[in-house]
Length: 428
Image 1 (cartoon, one colour):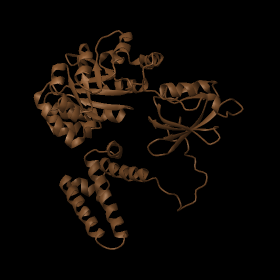
Image 2 (tube, helix red, strand yellow):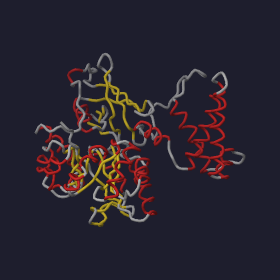
Image 3 (spheres, one colour):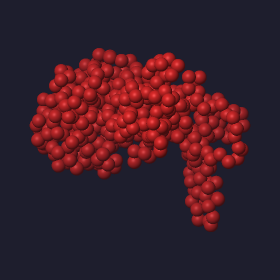
Image 4 (spheres, one colour):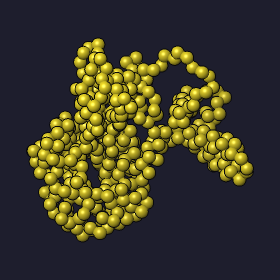
């Protein structure tokens, strides 16, 4: 049984979110504001339609899509303006989990096989509003894409009969109780369109209604109930909060039963404030929400470890972590977090680009430009190959370090972050 998803969408035109593909009325000038609202209300994914026409507009739209992907706490699917394999690559490299080929265009039918061979069928969806096209190309679609985006909600039954693929249905106007009827179709994996955009605040309530009707939806399911834990004398559980990417410990707080239930239900960290004696949704006033990635109990079931995606600072002082008051530290024996080392070195390189320093080799490379950076990168790659032919590993280690430094200079020059690189690797 497919998990049914609530997937808002952004129709992106001239840098703004507009009403729909056939209505260019601006609904939001800042698409990232919409992304944050969808984050906060339990959306399961996001479809972004690039409605640009010219190549320059397309490049500007890709920059916005890159920002959307970096902001979204959900999978982003990119659609629109795909004419060649390069366009698929650009959407995926911008951070989209999948790209959508409009199979109403005959050229995209042929492109589907090439793109599938290059990127894998799991990276591709096909969109269409005509079931006849789907039926005519059934074999190719089932071989080359992982699902469909059906843009005609009146052809759900026919589409399910025509092809054995899961499909997302774009619905722009429907009574909310009718969603249950759409979700009842076996191959429907979710609903997108303005029906979800206009009712994003109701997503959590709608998920509850789905569960009551036996419809499988994307929510956290707690393996332990509140009564399974050993609480402190106040009836509370301490929670240690950790960044899920870096492992950095961010803060410690407490939960009561209601906070625990709300965290599981919404996916946003909610605590109990002992001083105010009330629930405390982290980020409600500051905007620094914490999105739950995993929750575990210790061996005695008296402490929780929450791994989260942290927006902004975890500490009320503005510090990333609450644990910044160093008491003692033994020198020379701390094992550095590799990702943190990369980030710290990269931060220095980016700072040199913004604030040049006289005599800096990094600034020398930036001043000479992309050709010099690429020349040095090529030289360092060759040095690795030469070093690897010699016995021992130390020389290889030194050359790899030189290569990584020059690679980070290139990343800064091309405005690529480590997070984008690690996300791409994780997706592969």
